[in-house]
Image (tube, rainbow, N blue to C red; front, side, top):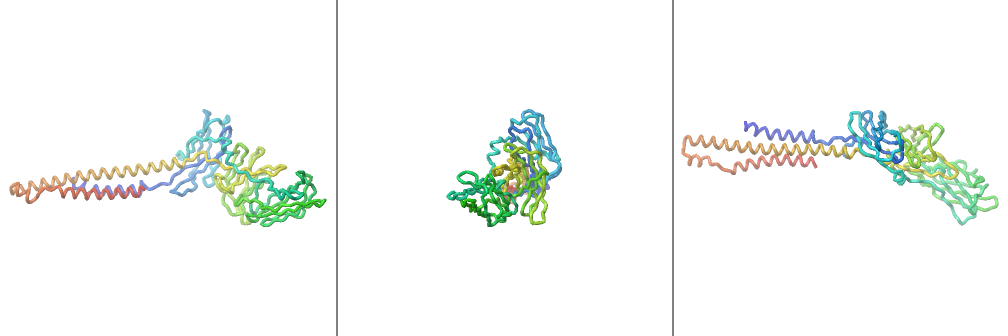
Length: 436
């Protein structure tokens, strides 16, 4: 029996190690989810963005294996749950409504169709912390101040993007007062201007022309000539947002446009202190080398902005928070990103690392036990063989002659044990190398 076990143990150990390395210990894809949104403090309705992903090593990919369920409760209020049935590339926007304004952290859990938790934890974000990361674009750019007429320019909606028409405001002042009926000559390099020769200031000293950048660094020259002969001008670069998406508003909603081919876009409708709603849109080719999508928006407060980007969290230099209303003065953008409120991937990754660690420890324990058992079986076999040889020789000769013919030495046993040890150490090294 010991002889069979002595031969079987090394084979079994090799098989167990191979199974651990090639099956049980192989890194698996990690499923998790991220929750983005705006401030939670003082909100009765939380607008959140859910991103379900798979992580394979250093590579992430969208994941969607069926409906998701989001359960949340705050301050002892009854839990609210939302079922997410559809998503675009694993991204969906949801709204959680509470009976009262949220004044404490919100406990939230997101589970997949199988009931596996993809993200779990408390979320909390103050309005001041959310708005602190916002970027604002747009303001008057003043021309030369030594001339009689002071000319300034500004994008009416706070920003320009390549390939899209937007209003450009021109202001002319004389000693700080509006200068009406001033004739303007507008020229551009790297941009198109609609009817530049017909510009003339109104009673407020303002004029409005349509402006379309065709490259990233357009320049604009405006020469102003009053009826009394006074003049002024401005020669300035016009800031353009590289890679920005354009938003066109209408009574029926908004149209999001890209001057380059894109497959999806993401938006958030925000006010000064809240995220109202959001969405993920599939873009359609527009036949001119660009792409577009349309969306309907709920009634919005004043002021409100639509933040658009090709990034899920709107956290990019190209993200623009387009104002949905404009007034007498140039509007500014409100480029605020969706804050990462909860990330379930680190916990899922840690869980996967724990599983692989258990596989390694179990494999190492098996190797150690197999080594110990092999040593014990070898010693038992050697001692049994020595006794059999000794009994056989002593039946025909005296003890001294028998020991001289078949001496009992420790060295062969030590050599055998070292050989077994080297084999098991080699297996342990293989496991350790693959674990690293």
